[in-house]
Length: 371
Image 1 (cartoon, rainbow, N blue to C red):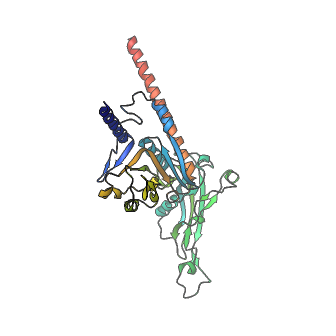
Image 2 (cartoon, helix red, strand yellow):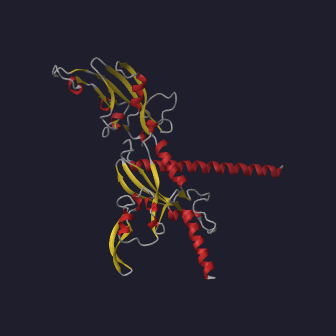
Image 3 (cartoon, one colour):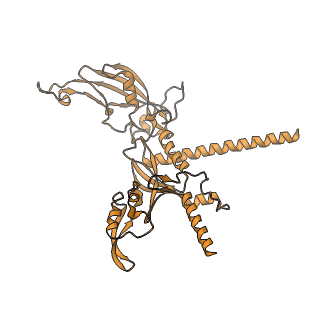
């Protein structure tokens, strides 16, 4: 009876691990996907899935700066984590240059290329304070931001005759993003007196010019989303990965502890000293699995075959969009919160459509019964 119970418990533990973990094997990765619904299990038919979700769901901010954020999304399915990632990239609105009116351009850069480069400049403007501009709708102070450029390259009269450095030989040879001058329309000057509308960075190179070349243009910014064009994306990339888990089945001591620690990213496993089974020895201790890159190096050594298991927690996601990946248009926290609000709106629209469909189906059934 006890053997049967032990075997049943062993099978249950194995099934639970396959349901909740992605198993890292020596030659590959196992249990990568599941056909089950989140929190569903054949062993738990009477679970209230909504309560289970509310109990497990959590968001932990690990690191946050103005344009740098790392957070843990816990207790959700991969579909939700990926939906938020895709929304951050493609559906959080921002302001970007959409139309460029070129009055004069004698530089070597064609008008179309110049307009494209201007469109990719990140603009520091709160998109919540502007409306989307629809087709054939005239520009107003509520849907358009206007910038202008009037720039000319000339010789530097103070340069030496033998000077060869363009930075000293010419004046205005580099047209930078700081040359975009905001032209307030309507009451924009009053509304944005404390935070004038401008490019996020002033030192982005737009065009290199030589004496005699001029550029005069007007650029109109409009509200849009990355799904229509990448210039409206508030992040260059947004990513997530599953939380690594390192399970020590046996204590790893002595010189093997140093070898084991060297198999992982620095800081994941540390070697400490202490008493184990009455003996004072060195032993390996897992201290920070989240920074592990899961190289599987430990699984390549025979001495660790039965002592360690590498997994990833299926419903624990490490999400990042950092300064290297952010355009600087919006604060990192606002990008995430806006993506959550957009996902909520999508869910409400879906529920409304389902309710409408169910009511329509019920009306059709009633009509059939009457006939």
